[in-house]
Length: 258
Ligand SMILES: [Zn+2]
Image 1 (tube, rainbow, N blue to C red):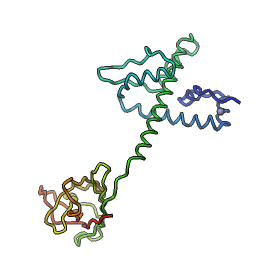
Image 2: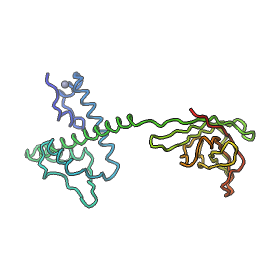
Image 3: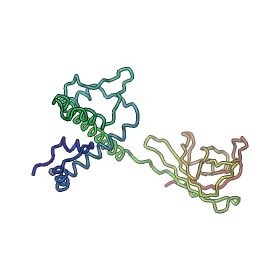
Image 4: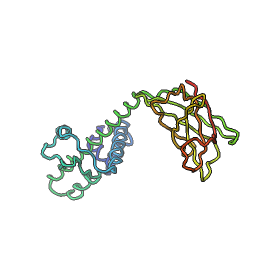
């Protein structure tokens, strides 16, 4: 038996009804079924990006390549608003259904237009899929953040039962971040939680920010040496306008290199 035409597969993936023979073939042929599944995914991805608003116009040579690949004259490129460098994108279904609905039993000329658009949509959907593959591979190859240090945070007497953790990581570009988790009763309505780094002898202290909820990630300023600022502290701060540490620590712990 012969396999389904690639263009028919694309049309069906875009939502056109398969005829009984095509349906039967898709049921029986794993090759075509696999290709159909992949096309459907690409179409889904393509459509899911249509709600983001204006898209940036690709360089003219990209359009020329697509046009060449699907056998379109370069003159039939869509109107590009060069001032704002954006293209108005219509949903894929409209592009395919619009012309098709109006010319189903008319002259062959617009029919070719439909087929062209179908190829363009197919090429665009395939491009989106290719970009996603590249992005996925890139994110796999990108080095993961390195864990530098971690701390177990223990409760102060005023907050029995509280506990927490802190983990310091360094991005490949050298940015350090600390993620803290706090397991404690909710803050009072007139108080908030603040995360601090403190030197071992408590001679210096730096605020990293307000902890909302039970977990937060904060950037560590470049000039803070975590070999000196080894204590991670989460405090309860009254809404009194005083930016200094209230003295009411909930949990605290010492960072240890990992
Ligand atoms: Zn087949």
